[in-house]
Length: 188
Image (cartoon, rainbow, N blue to C red):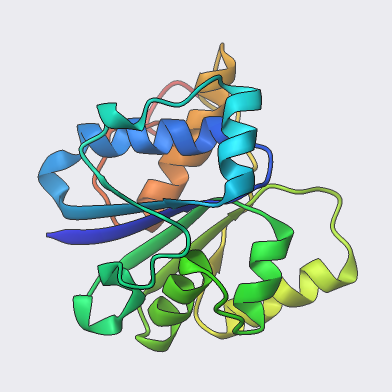
C-alpha cells in the first residue's frame, strides 16, 4: 500500500490541489496513509480561488508546516511518494538547493535522499533561467517536474475537467491506477 505526502504551496492553482485530494479519496484502496501539509500562502490562495476550505471532509492526516515530528519528516517512515501541487518557484528553489526550512522542504529532501518519488507540479509562468536551473537540479537529484499544463485531447468542458487532465497525469506519475483519458483509446 502506498504512503503519500501531498504538499500544497503558495502558487496559484488551488483547484489542482482540491481535485487531487478529491481523487485520492476515490483511490482509497490504493493507499495506506496520506499526509497533507499546506504553506501559509497555499491557505490564502485556496480561500481566494476556491473559498474557505473544509479539510475535515478528507480522510487524511493534516500537518502544520512547522511540524518536524510528522512521520514523513524522516526516511524511516517509508513514505514512497511526495507530490507538491501546486509548487511555487520559491519552494522549487528551496528543494533544489536543499534548504529544509519547513515541513514541505524537509519532506522533499527526505524523499530525494531516500531515492523515492518526488513530483513537483510547477504552476508559474513565464520561467526565468533560475527557475529552469532549479528544475534541472531537482531532475538531476531524481525528482520529476510536471508543469501544470493541461491537455485537451479529451475535450474537457469545464475548468475542473481541464484541471483534471493535469491531476490525472500526476496520479499516473505517482503510480496510481485510475480511469482517465488515454491517448489512442477513443475520444480523440
